[in-house]
Image (tube, rainbow, N blue to C red):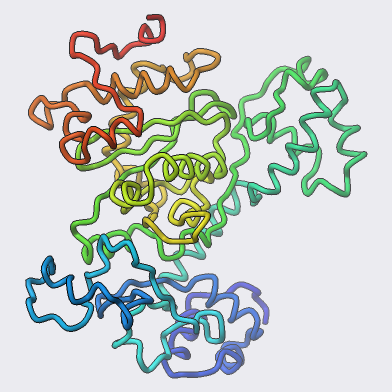
Length: 429
């Protein structure tokens, strides 16, 4: 065992062993690795794959809606006696069923005799996919820090209040050495990068030193949140659900380490919602989705947010809390991620950000914005006519599709064409 890392040949052997029905222990013995190493490899790089074999709702055997669903059947069947593969679309009772075998060895469906006939989403191990994921993870690990949001918040809660009281960072780090998972030098980097509420102005001695240009630390994401949500899986999902409504989600940083916008663009009309956040964290994103569920109600929320595509920023690293109602646990939408460095996969959203930058220039914005100002900017941008839609404004199309009541619940208001302002002067009125 000269090399603790698995090679591509090792991964090919793992895949072949799984397909032959070998136990994890036997596969590990064949490639000269520890059993736990192979088990962790399979669980870390397995891939959730959709299937079109039938209905995967937990109620598919006891559903009472089946006799009436044929009236609006997607496939035109008039004598349907069972639930078809698409009857769950738009059904308020739909709840996806998952295979219970995922959590026991060998953790994947490669060996399952029923895999090709199974109606549930499958968890598969593919050597090529696993190697790509490993290489990407290795590349990212060399250019950033691996830190969860909870750990970052703990550091922030410990360090910032004491710095605000005038205490020095070396003393704080020495006193709380057992509580802090990183070094004093690393915390200086976090403050430089704006990852903490503390600023360089709170570091008295730091102000005497000339600033050096350097790249700050990167807050890396727990990659497990991407399993089953890659762009390729998004394309597969859309192939099976071509009528699903797609939204593109992103962040627009106003001040590094401070105020940030969450934007959600509906691709069927280019209307973009904008929400102000004080910090660019996963918690602030899930809080906004909780507010949306409360304001819209379950039915309208499910209609508006069916599929969401976003990038792999740390603020989007908790997709379960976006997809599911926190009180009931019900999955109400699906979240997928663009490929790394491929923002063109949500190009509508990116293009619309140009209009935001007309009003809030990068690095030249006000010191602080209010929610009312952001809502005002949102309405001016959404009222701006687009050539793409034959001179219609996104807000007009949105109202035609979803109704004025839904627009009102989201704080959308049409601005007369002659009053639309797309410059920083908007906030001076």
